[in-house]
Length: 318
Image 1 (cartoon, rainbow, N blue to C red):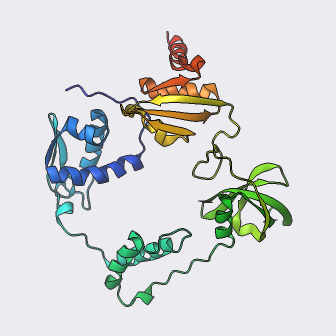
Image 2: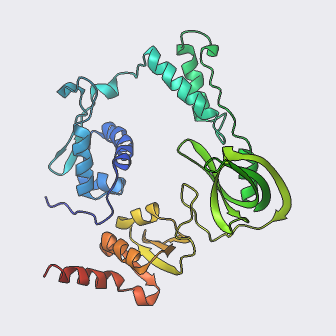
Image 3: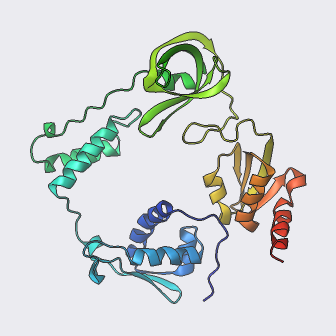
């Protein structure tokens, strides 16, 4: 049977493993499913699904003998799963694993913004009786980050803050007024991305180096169109080129991977996305990767950018 390969960006290992964690219990419950039906259920091409099943079939638990591997395979046009031992036996943790999970869980609950009464807290309560003694055996004490909550609360109203900031490289302290735009964690440290009056630019400040902080009473509302990525940085700051793309379901990775200014899901499953891009060259590369899955709607002058780029690339090999 010929399998259609989906034209989309490469999926990372983390994405594939996360998908398998959902697919395998679903498949084990049904035992045997048509390949096409399962691919449709999880929005994958049949080729992608076969690749994931092949990867799952060589996974298991020590000693990785045949009876300890996930028993899943493709039989003609069907996906078949037998219940492996790891799914039929209850999960058992040794004392070291219980201790490690408890410590990590308690540390996570102490992080700013953690839900103290959420699912993690409930799981820790279930682990408590498995500890060798009372709950006091594990104490997690994380040093609070000064001014973290104040900075977070200042982002939405666009509050002006007067700070004293220490710079280790020059061993100097400076006073400056900042307007916090986002607060984020990176590499074990908390940062604030803020408009800085001293430099006139958007700068990142490590929060643990802020020695003093006070509110000036002035406010500047945040720009609603500004898009920031996970680390707090701007996406193509001051980009002049805005494009509207029609993204088919086969290329949904475009919507999932890149920040956008607006999004509208159409009745046929496609998505209309408006995004800021850094250059025509970057957009052309994106269109090549996405193939027929993405079409430029606006500006009109770029509607054939993908075809023109593909033609230029083809000439190099003729």
